[in-house]
Image (cartoon, rainbow, N blue to C red):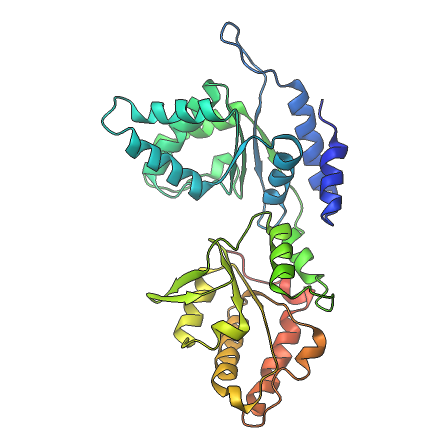
Length: 349
């Protein structure tokens, strides 16, 4: 039987303390795992090894799955759902021309991994619904355990989707063959961690400090991408994922970006992070104007935003004269957007 102390200690070493709902989930998982018996070819196995964790955005589902992987299943394969579907479609292309190519994909997956983690499970169209249904059932039948996180209960997957009735067989299979655990509670784990970040800590706002913090908070690396597209134009960034964008103040706001770009950015990303701030004066008017416009739009749209800078820097972030009438409002909004109260009333994507 796995020792829950292992995962708790690993999380503690990262500065993460679990709340009661998160701890209860781990206890349920430990009990489920202890009862699980690997299926044998010659014997029927009724024990459930699959897990489906669901709950509100920001409750730490990704973090918990990462903790299970790191503590107990380091040889398992991890996917974000979109990444998993891309992987499946790539394999389907490799097996095109064969009979039952999807079954061959399932066998390939099960031969390579006996445990697969899929984060942020969601169904957006009927084609993916049919594919994922066959894959989930096939992997389970071949003895591969699936550990899944989602914002939705299985009964609400692909809700109101086109031809959803065809997907109900998969919904029933998940309900029957997975331990369904609702991560209760309204506290947003990421908001809590981001709100309490100490920007005055030495090197905390450096690229390495921010990278370490984002990896710890989001349980995945956001720095694999150094570019992103806005309004059919390419811009540099320090990191980018489906929901988060990490920008350098020094670089991004020096580029020819404008309000229409900022509007698209806040629509596209749940979280925006900015560091590499420096003191500006009237020699940096274009940069300051762009930043003022960005903050106005982000504030209006209740964007989830975290700026990493030493509080002492804010006093002199803009020391010029020509934009002081605008900067006073921006400075006030930056202070407000850094508060826990503001973060707790943000839009939910």
